[in-house]
Length: 514
Image 1 (tube, rainbow, N blue to C red):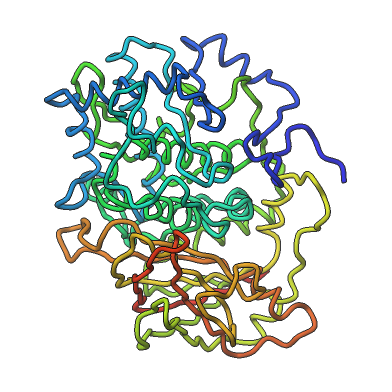
Image 2: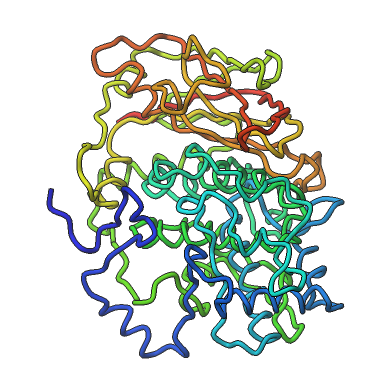
């Protein structure tokens, strides 16, 4: 299989490299006209404890924690949230990624100024490569002094290990091929029709996909303590976690992922949400947050060329637009032509570790049959083109489930795994089982903001059933007229208790035809 050097490396441990460029002409031209070159955000993997970047972060955290006023640890953290609930941060809507990019930038710039290290850039925790918390954050002391990066309220121990179902390579690969943006980066708030500031803080008004629902939420809960709350940014590992989320967005775009062109997204301004190092307000628009390099940082030492999908066929562009309509259709509205929708209320008891929740949904077997017969990407290749993977994702029928308005309890150490039509399901059923769909978690509580001053929204999650349907039924079996969607809670940290429970108010299955 021929593979260009601009292809994204998708398999094995090569995701850290992410992308290889054939040439850098475009970025070189950009660099010649831009002041000064962006700083490199490095991985914590293999970083020595006395590395200048880690030492600068320790100093920066210590100085911010000892400061008062707007430029301080307490002030910055309150922007995100505190023990009373959420601040200005968006979760469960499509401003999640650009808002947190600006939030991290505030810390990075402040630390540069406070420490005098103009070369500083926030490092990232690549939890796919390093499944345990980095040592720099788990040691209680450093050089005989209290370690500013240690947070005593964490629940995870230094030997607790993140599971494949949350941060494994397959999860990363799945996210990188997703299209369009709202499938990858969480969907728009339901019913949004303007750029009023209240839509930013409309917590859980959209539907979370894999990136936010799986690694983002579950890593927060894995670390636990204040990291599992709205006040999570009081833990210094928060920034390293979110830098990796930011890096995955960057990788997705480098591999040809296209951000939403909708002005309701790109035209939103985060008015007075952040601070410049001099104490003045920083109010970026989403359109200014799309590319890291003009913001002063990057994730590679050598500038690279972005993979372009501009050559996508008209048919695939139309398919992408059809997928967009999955997210832009107001809740309860009729799905457009080419999307079959089947819904069911949930009346069963909430899912617990001891007893999974099963929701039967009646579907049209004839509509489901092409999904079951959908060919998988070829296996056996060491390197796979991300552009090819994304086009394969769009080409052919797909089936999604929307799990809406969850009531949940005690989310700190609980991962929720989704299975399809599994007759022997239990908490010990492995994620290698062919009935396994994916996993998700919940971050924070229901006490978020709601647009227009109404009741706070409850989280909604989307999962892609396509691969599981093809595995369970394949091209030769006849799909049933009923799908049984199952939710099985398990413990995130091996040996820990998982006493969380969850129940959605309803489930919708949507089949996008070829």
